[in-house]
Image 1: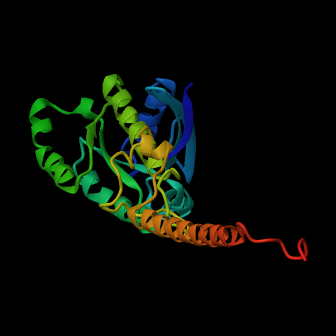
Image 2 (image 1 turned 180 degrees about the horizontal axis):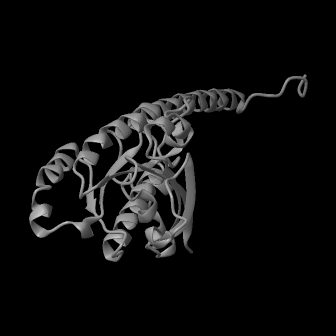
Length: 258
């Protein structure tokens, strides 16, 4: 039986970097620039598409935000709910990469937990020599721990499909990390941080520990002490009852003999 999750993805970056064309190619498999009515995004548009990752259906909500900086504050409500942000820049205009830092900061200010993916667009406009000149951008992404994907909305193909497959995988990991299988100490609520006392498999949604949680060492100790005290009390009561029974053996009951 397949699972289904909803995931919110922000698409941000400078104006005219091909953000809408990227999304339209992925969702509808068309090149939006061929449409004469295609124009700049004002505010924010939302498109949807489902991606399957093994037995999980990830329903992606793609928020295509305007690239003009004057619209940045209008998209703040979308920044807050995004789980992954695609930072787009035009590979044929390196100056647009510098401006992605503005959008990265904007999103981070409203949503510090959002994950970023750097997306280069319009790769079809580059020669092989120009592609090699973008190596510093690849190194920057690697140093920042941000995945980097060169794409072409004109050509489409596996690069774009693979990009959004990676987005879906990231969203699945985020959803799994918020699941309530993490145990909490007795008398407390909320998620508990992993400790050395945790048995193997605590972080795995398929681990036996998630299905049959075991008490922590300190909880076990308290339970054992409680059981020991209870057993001692039961033994005392039992011994006391045994003494009374033994003292009455061979003795006449009161009032039965003169």
